Length: 131
Image (cartoon, rainbow, N blue to C red; front, top):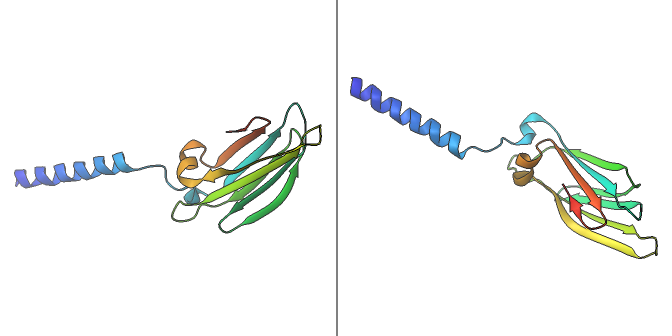
């Protein structure tokens, strides 16, 4: 009887250790909304930033973000943790040349649940996009 209990205990321990090793962050969907914040830091031009974000299901349309301000949107991850939002940016430099950036994967469920969980910030600067 002692041998059988020991085998069951060892099997149970192996299952627990395996689950702990293979587990990853649980979907943010289970805990509510995810907020993505995009901040305009286009310095030195101080230009207004035009933002358009999309997913497979949603078109968030164009938004104008003044220098120093932010644009936010919220959503819930899908059940399969495959939620993806991408954004394109454009702005006019002081010499009237338009610059464009993107599309950038602004939110990818599998990447960002570990990186930023429920609040994902991005800064748009003249050189690039930064988390």
